Length: 328
Image (cartoon, rainbow, N blue to C red):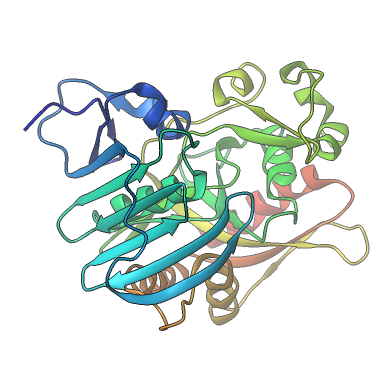
């Protein structure tokens, strides 16, 4: 077999990408560039990216999703036994077989790689190693090498809260995407080392990040800042596995005061699953069932809280430290 164009080490899973040109896998390098390895053995999961005019937009299988994806347009998803097909009509398709450890992405020469499709293929690669990508932030505690996971729907303030905690001695693993890996009796996680998107409002609330920002903002009022740049002013962690110390559900405070209150495990599971488990036209697909199971194990393994963030997100730092000290 030919050598992969690039390989990434994903904490026990080696991902190999086969493509003729670097621009075909640039989305993966934007997320995983710091995890690139050379001289790896045969990859555990293979992604073959082919540039072609021919796209199979009518594969066999049961339709599980047919709708619009924000920023990326119309998408269809079909399940055919162990193979999942993704179709972005006229632009890009993918076939994924997690059980056999491969995916093939086919892309038209005149189109740009679709970000959502790239993420779904990465999700499948991690799932093949019993790792589960979660839409959460992750920060290590100031006094030990353990991580707290913070989850909430987009726009609730995960990035702002994460950066505020990082100014108080917490270590930033990721502001948006953590990977959960479970072992008997413990839960561990690591952060995808991708850029942090900082909103104008976040920059106003946390002025310490100003040296990392340029003058140009995108249409959403955000700037993407690399972890390397943030590391110059804040504590930024590497991508090694770390034990999970707690799970926090982020909510806006009703009275501008920041507080941390215990959350039942049932409520914590429901809140985390609502933002991380997708239900298709035919119910839960196998990957989603495994993710639901992982979430259930996570909430049983660690304390769960609601973090109500008020006018000063940095106030959460002391509350988290005090609450977890009582758990020890």
